[in-house]
Image 1 (cartoon, rainbow, N blue to C red):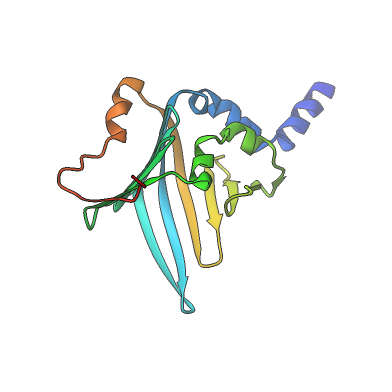
Image 2: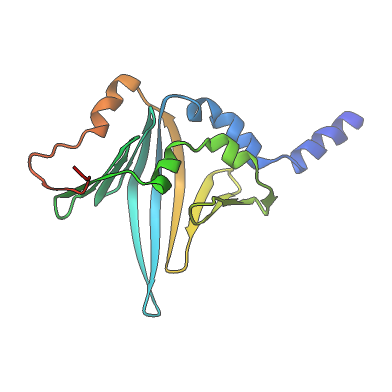
Length: 188
């Protein structure tokens, strides 16, 4: 009877985030991985709300580099440089990475998520240098992620983590500049 009560207690009061982190820690701790998700943006302009959905968004992480890719842009962050490609206009902006963006390269995802308390299967995540985030888990323990700000809310749903082959990753962080209008904002 005690064993049954102990199991029931663990099921009722288990921490969903801890379980999810344990399942995905080998991927998150690897040198390279991919996060795929559906992104929904809500912009508030002049009292009206405008929605945009991108179903094929991904983030690649490889050796202190991050690449965000959506249907209309690619952002590549490396140790010293940030590149923003607008696919619609074929414009590439290259700049020195600023201190706020460089902090994304140093975030320990597991430590960041581990230090939070759950309220209704949602976790408030606070970063000193950025907006507030909310990580929630649905009844299938599938995560969703929200970035909340005054004029724009971003929701990431159907989040999937996967390992990727490190040998193939190098090509993803190179943007062919031959056919683009390049604006190099770095100080020479």
